[in-house]
Image 1 (cartoon, rainbow, N blue to C red):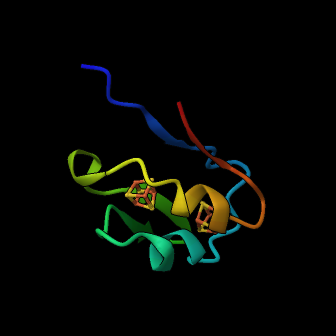
Image 2 (cartoon, rainbow, N blue to C red):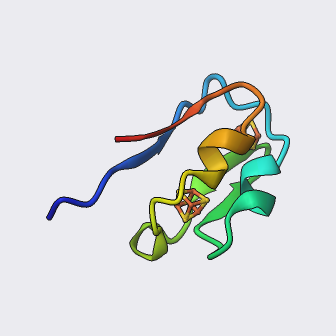
Length: 61
Ligand code: SF4
Ligand code: SF4
């Protein structure tokens, strides 16, 4: 499995929801005031959420 791991630094997340809106395949969702990776298997590693996050707390590697 060469698939990259998507991770969110929840301490840094401000709950803006930009990543949820940015994801074309609905991998991300909100869990209260934090983002969560709801459907990791659906991630195409496009990087849109990483670019959309205003506090750069999403990493894909
Ligand atoms: S990398 Fe792309 S497909 Fe994966 S969660 Fe982010 S926006 Fe969605
Ligand atoms: S874009 Fe960043 S700060 Fe906003 S909800 Fe997503 S992970 Fe949190």
